[in-house]
Image 1: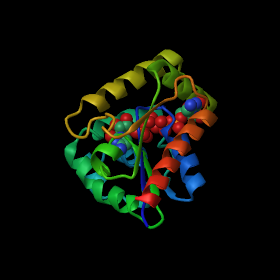
Image 2: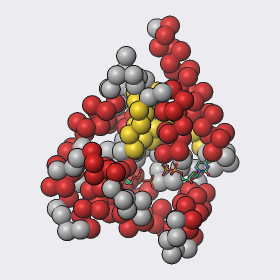
Image 3: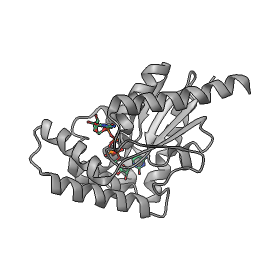
Image 4: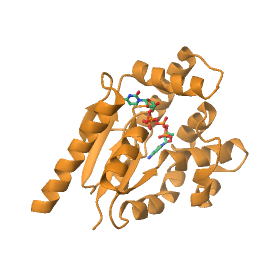
Length: 207
Ligand code: CDP
Ligand code: CDP
């Protein structure tokens, strides 16, 4: 049986952390689709043409170091606005989504474009200020030299680009459950996400 869990939302909303916990709880695989765009963005910074980079992407590229930097995040959101880059990455994501046993995919367009038929959809969000604080804390802990104001500006710029592009813009699917984590700690956010998915799995059993 396959069971797809789509988790979308803006930068640093908590998608990755929640997705990992949900995947572990239900014993299914997890694909962080942001890494696909980050890998293409990093190649672009290295001088490779983005569509070529997307067509040549292999799973090992996602293990590469250095995908979690602020520069790569910005490059990712630029290449993510190119329709040919997006279409080159569709089959890989859909195949992952339908793997036996089930899968969690997190990104921007999983519930709207990649897996509109996903059995469970969550849209994880939080205010830009809260998200920028979280991302700043992560970057600071990782030794990056930056400040909160820069991270906030970067976050807003990326949100704007992601939400206004013509192809697969960031927006909640109509049937997504919205999870605003602005005032939730990560444990509470994970518990709510698990409850949403558990209810959908139960529906499936009785359908
Ligand atoms: O994947 P995404 O960019 O949406 O976010 P993430 O990497 O899961 O979370 C960004 C940071 O915010 C991590 O350090 C999380 O632990 C933290 N976080 C939090 O403190 N409280 C939440 N409710 C959600 C995330
Ligand atoms: O972790 P964070 O939320 O900061 O970013 P990410 O999920 O790694 O995504 C990096 C960039 O890739 C985003 O700003 C989007 O432009 C793009 N992306 C996308 O367009 N579609 C996806 N399914 C995932 C990421």
